[in-house]
Image (cartoon, chains in turn green, purple):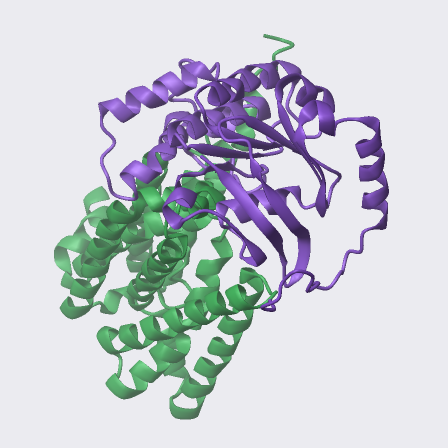
Length: 289
Length: 248
């Protein structure tokens, strides 16, 4: 019974195995990206960027059909363009980064919807918006795995300046560290991971596997490496459970995975060891102790 | 280190906040910078560190010297919720030696541990920065400053909202910097503290009201002049062309 439910789908079907491996790769890449977005108080930036990849993905889709490399390259270029334009506008005008990101991603999103509706059918739009982890082919799997590897390598390289820039940006500037380059490299990693996520989960859901596990992990660990490890575990766990549920009950896989991550997040808010609701209530106040 | 200002004007968006400042900070001594809010004290420190372009005049420093100046800004930009240990924060002080990728060997670690002891936080290495009080956090930042080993050290209101005991401990560190021959410039509001510990004072109200040995600066006449000048300054004064023949 347990075997039928938990293992058989993956033993019997190659597309389920590929989906599971894609989830593992996504979890490893998205965990550190999501955690640093969270720690930099840029949780909503991933969301903005995930919307901004749409026109690029749509153009890639029109030129190359439903192929992840074509859509991925288009999405990557579009996402990076929005990130760069927002960064430039922030630097040279009085508007702040969040406002500029919001403005540019809305422009980009509208452009994307325009392109898709003018040249494709609604079914195509649904594909781009919601993706399908069950349709991951070998080439897409390689791409997702490559992005996960680049991400982990990138974080190993950038770790110290990134931590310094998050914790005390003024210090890094005064010490002559290249804060702007670190920021840009980080944004490149964010966009790369969104691109990896959208074949599996779609442009809208891709950010779910980034932020929900990161937010949940905050309730369980204190140290940075532990936070990232917990986030990756939660993300992969959500991927696995989401796939099983989606297979068993014939649900769309992307939303199933993100919803499982959402349940983990809600449970973490309630039960989390670090500042969760229940541990706070149970802990005796020092007047009674 | 000799920090010499030559007819220096600094400001934001071409609105000057510090005008026509000329003089030399006593090398290897402690100088306090005093003046009301908006007098240009923080602007001056940022300008010396090179975080603001000069609108006119110059600071006699080359890029290498400027890079070695240690600078503690008014605490605002720190992200205290960030999961980073006290030791890692202090080790950032080695940045000039290690950069983004250099190894941190046992020597550099020992220096960090010693600095933590010197600021009164022995054994705090593994504590998270978020679990510290404001005063303890300031002690950590002073330990980081010690590792920066700058020939000049700029402190922007280092003791704002800090309790007396912590100020005493950190002032001991500052005085030691003076004994080691470092040029220290500190923005302060506590005139008693300035009288007690800082041999030189720059009194600033957009322009230098007085600059010299503290006992000649902190006298009733100059304090009265400071009060009057801060009441009359113009927030949006345009950049004046006095003494800049080449235009700005």
